[in-house]
Image (cartoon, rainbow, N blue to C red; front, side, top):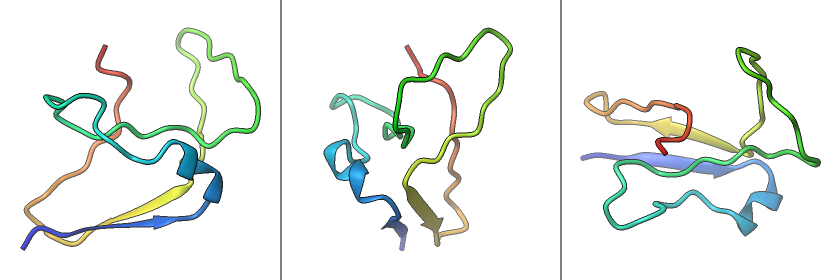
Length: 70
């Protein structure tokens, strides 16, 4: 059985829940949980809170967090 548990840590994300952007999307969109706009420059790295905790219970499933596909 393929099981994915999602725990909401920040209630502000209810405005933008995890979801597929289009019917043909390969993965869910995950948004940063930030209070104000942030400028990220080329080659700069920054950790962001997402407001969710994800537990993938099935060892045959893998999760990746990558930059936008577009």
